Image (cartoon, rainbow, N blue to C red; front, side, top):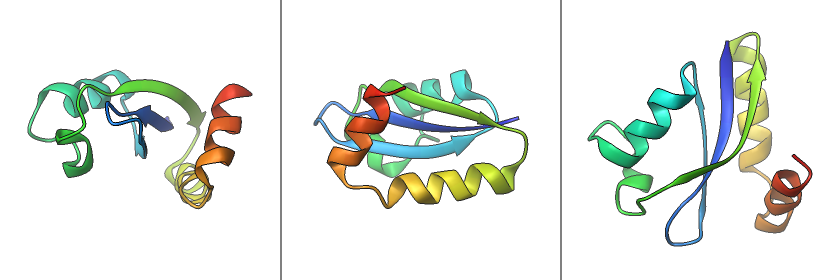
Length: 81
């Protein structure tokens, strides 16, 4: 299983990613050196959206689609979640 997720960062920005283990990845973003460079200086981060997929291909397509959305569209996506 793959997950596409959106994090809300401490500077009020969003980060979108993909993982196979959502809990581990959120912990990495908040606590370790293997979190994304983007989130390291924007801790703590909070999970605000996730969606599960059966394979990496589907998850990658959705991740790409979300990353292209405007901030307003991402907010709407999260609110409708």
